[in-house]
Length: 164
Image (cartoon, rainbow, N blue to C red):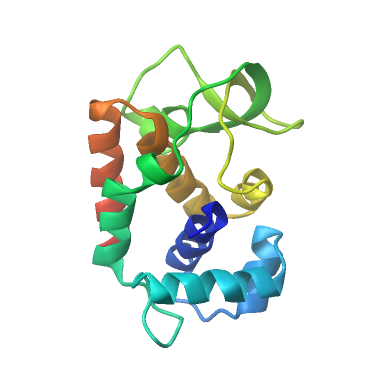
């Protein structure tokens, strides 16, 4: 698995109930169609997506996010910079968790100044600006990557509600 595989899977989750093609995911995520195809194949091998390559195995994805994400793609906050809010600084967690230490993905046109968090893929901030549901999924994942126990538990509850 590669970091952007999580982004591809969560983009598929954000598209639930709508028809999509790999080229759509590639365009919306800002990665090549071949990378999307390879990513989906890795997720198939990992048991995170069904054989039809369209539907997620949600329980497996939740288990991976719950138990593996913070170990496989850990993150430590970096220097202060302008960027796009993430983790508990973005929706939906910013309505539940109050904090004076914002986290942000580096993004020149961002709206907050916060501690730098490396996104799972360089194009995640722009992709999130075009899709609010995807943005929420990615922010929840960042809460799992760097949050404390309370933040992780709240993020997991929110992911379970959304993924079903």
